[in-house]
Amino acid sequence: MAEEKTHRVTDVDTLKALGHPLRIKIYRALFVAGTATASQLADQVGEAVSLVSYHLRKLASHGIIEEAKDGRGDARERWWQPVSTVISTRDEDWRDEPERVAVHTAVSRLYAHQRTEMYDAYLDSKESWDDGWRNSAFASEYLLALTSDELRRLGAEINEVIEKWRAHGKAARESGDTQGRENVAAHLYGFPFLI
Image: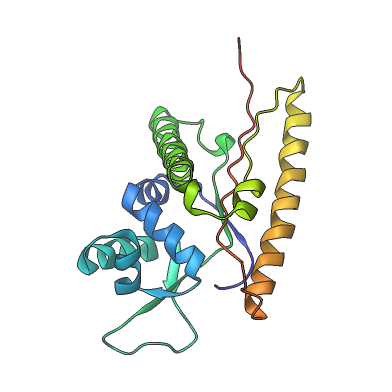
């Protein structure tokens, strides 16, 4: 992956490009791999190489991924890598026009749905994980009484903790410490609600 940075998406076309269910899966697989070819990613997502290649080019045209700069591959085989460490959207960037609101809401729902599918897949397969993983996995719900500023600060603190552990895992893998190390998803939401 390139440098450590956040790509804050603010344009509708890029958000629409990221809002395709297969592209989300391809991007997620590429992010985990760091670099990969279309054929490697096609194996991971269970789709044809030509279809995955198309979606990779679409993501690249919006600056989400790029050809890997480490000299891998040749004219027949392109290696790809994510451009950013984090892709984010902020609600405040999407309130100015009804179309932008609708696109942001639809894409946010799609991501929430895929995250639920990921957790459902874990629940369906958890018997195949050893006790160490099963005892470490967690799901929690906390109901808090906060102001909007306090919720923002809570989110920033949680992001700092996640970033610390993301960097730790990346450094460990890069140093060869891979024994017992798996990909882990941590999905977090913080929002107001009414009873």
